[in-house]
Image 1: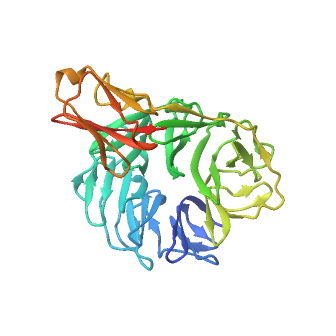
Image 2: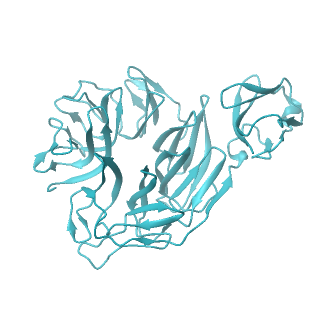
Image 3: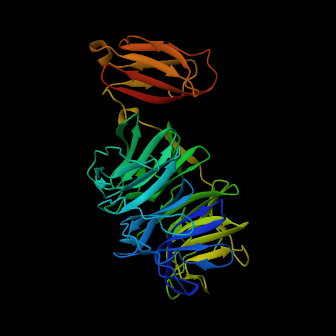
Length: 432
């Protein structure tokens, strides 16, 4: 695929079976495709004149209400002055101008609503800072209270998770709270999040997150944090760009040399090449491809074939521009040693409303204990609900220590809601 073709985002229109590419693109198979392109399984094509101006780069895309939304750094979509946000209806660009005053870098569709994050502090003339929600007609501010720019955004278990350079934040019942700090060097940040098999996978560049030291990748289930071996081995600027599950396997793409100590990197080639692609199987990281000369940003299954996309121009000895089909032929598989998936329980004090609140044990078997000295000074109510929202226990006034007998309940996840006259907080607990 000759031309400038650095694919940083990809989305599939499942209704029309079309792949849309976004990134730093100017041509695809000799067709001019500024910022965006489409592929129908046989040919590439432009989306009219694409996105232009500024950097002309698309960082994130979503199919929302049967239309393609593109986000990034650009001034125009087609002939329309639609800065930083564009909407493609399948045959042409819509004349929409939502007027964010700074670029949007990340997006997610959750419960039929579109969420975006970035540097902006206004959208559609409204004061909206860093995180916004769109229902197809109206924009809503989620009142993100922190100064540093948010990166990745993801809906999970009824909550919205947003990442910044310093940590991970969760939006629950109209309130933001700090979930975990991002530990690492000055370049640390969370790049993206994916929901796989009921877990929230969080990835990017960091030494630890949530108390586990699996470099650049962890997972969270609402109660526990999980690590996957030692993760990346730093020898330069490593980052995981994407984590996806396809046909029962978890694929990791990014810009990295070693993962769990194994590598296919080749620094003697011209240009030099990094591993940049790995598969998680049977508690091992396995490398099934030759190295790439630049970052990979994800994989996709399309028309029963597996494709990888990114900013690369070579894979091993082969010249491949930004988009390649995986055949599995002529590849040597290298796997790491088997590792244990470690975990830590979420520190309740990192997200509690009251400074000395304790809810334990978690997981519990028969009895759940809830304590706080604040319960003696103010009137707090308690409700415990099951996953269907049915209340299984309630108390009108909490004491300093509350031993709640839940032995009659079946195993599963429950929600503990504690509230006073002005605010409330909900916690997730697990019964074994």
